[in-house]
Length: 335
Image 1 (spheres, rainbow, N blue to C red):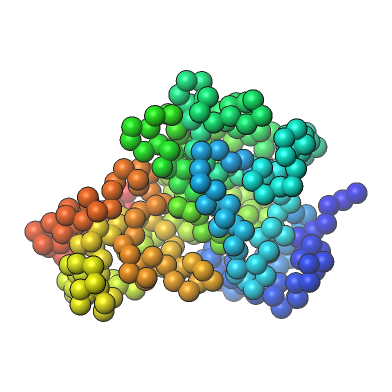
Image 2 (cartoon, rainbow, N blue to C red):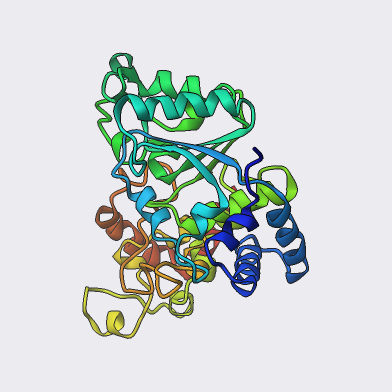
């Protein structure tokens, strides 16, 4: 029996044609595509079967899974799980133990060469990988086994992309990201702590629509989501240009929405689309809510402690000057 198409699954769940087209339009917007691409996206979703996804979870806090489960744009919260056929995800699946492991092996056997692997969490290499084992197998052995016959691999969250918190100094388990292990398959990184579910959905829909993964930067991050610095689209940017900086939490500048650079904000050095797609149904994001960007879509963000960096940022703003600072930011953008 053929698996149902994505659109058939959405209709079965009661998604209206209007909401479906809104979903296609919002996905096109996230991808940075014009409205002329909406019909092409709609056609791909209407005709193509749900891509089979095997979701592996290793050294992590499950934050990226939580982000996926809280998908809210468009209005159908469950839509992201209707865009994929999730064959294995040990955290949310009903099966456990041997039954869960059977689901995994059935998926990679029955859909050989036709499934996507999503990896959440870092992979420990030290001492033979004993610091993360599932069903008696180490994470390193499992990821190699499962990715062997995959079409592509999507790393979600900073831990899976760059090692994240588990890889923070002194990195006792030897944690690394997916791209440090998988070299013979296309790997795309969707970092963040956690990732934004809209970037995941857009990546899958792009793959379905165009038959390939989106263009990426040198860190294998899709350009549609990580092609611009947070600083470029930050609503506090005008205050940066005017030299208006928050000096202390709760001061006048903080209350009036001034720039958080001197408080350690890493927006000028972080590539992510947080200011444009935001979080919680597009309501807000950390800087808008008054907290500096912590650079969670960049490598080693945990080691680059936010508050330790605040003093350095203050020096840049005062001693280097705004004109020179703009030059430093432009240099980061071109590297």
